[in-house]
Length: 246
Image (tube, rainbow, N blue to C red):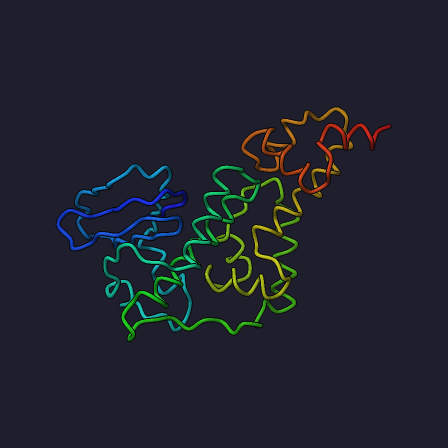
C-alpha cells in the first residue's frame, strides 16, 4: 500500500518489528501468502492506496525471456520505505481513479507490469531478476503496423495490453516497453489520443447522442468524456459539435 496524502502518522504492524512515520509516498509491501496482521496508526491517514498484483504477473511467459521465475519467492515483507518510481506509479493510478479516461484499463495494465519489474529489480534477492529490453529497442515496422491498424479498427472496442501484445506476438511486458520506444507514447496514451480524434469525427454526426459517443469510446460516463475532450481541445464536445456544424 502507499500513502498518497499526509499528514504524518506513525504506522506499525502487529506481530512485526515495523513502525514508520507515514508521509506522502511512503510504501508498504507484503507478498502473497504473508499473514497480514493488524495495522496500528497513531493518527488517521486521509488516503492510502492499496494495490493488489496477481501472482500471474510474475510468470516468465508474461515478463519475457530471461526472467528468473524464482524471483517472486525471494520477495519479502518490507514496511515504511521510499521508492520514488513506485510512488509515482501509485499517484498515476490514483489520478486515473479520480479522473477516469477512456484508456484507463490499458494504463492500469501497463503500470502493473512496471510495478512488477520495479519490485523484482529493487526488492528481490540479487540472484533474481529479468532481462530488460534495450532502452531504444522498439517494435519492428511490420509489428508496429499490425498493432496500429488493430487499434484503429477497434477504437470502440475493449482494447487491452494483452490483446495488443498478442497482435504483436510479444509478451505483455516487453510489448508495453517496445511500443513506447517505437512511437514515443505508451499504449494507453496513444489509444487515448486516437479515441479523442475519433470522437471529433463522431461529433460531426448530429444525430448521435453525446452519451453514446462517450460510452462507445469506453469512457465510463459522459462527464469524464467531456473533461478529457475539453482538456485536449479547449472545448466541450457540445461546443465542438456546434462549431463544426455551424
